[in-house]
Length: 138
Image (cartoon, rainbow, N blue to C red):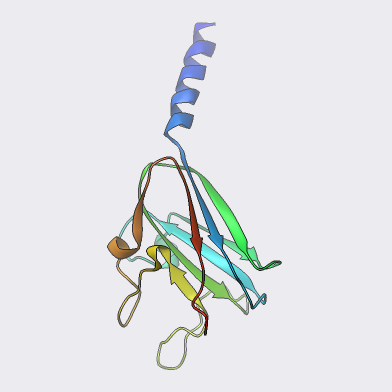
């Protein structure tokens, strides 16, 4: 009985520390391909895919997509999103290195001659949070 009680207390305290982040991309006019969403909790190499905390790729079936990341630790995060129109798993670029597929970052952060800084795109996740983003209209 004592072991069961201890197990319940530990699980309750772990659940109390976990946070959720819901990311919703709205007003998608082009429904080709997938939306890739990555979340990051460190500034090192932000927003490179291999350095993210986790990510998902979601097929576009409606004018919006959303995903909820669960069991996250409280802290600072940033979100990077791109529209993978041809489903090749990467943000396509022109001969000159400019992205040819839509992309966006949390806080609508913008960089000059590259992605924004982690600090500009970051926010503090405390409990549960929903972020709604929309690609620039061309």
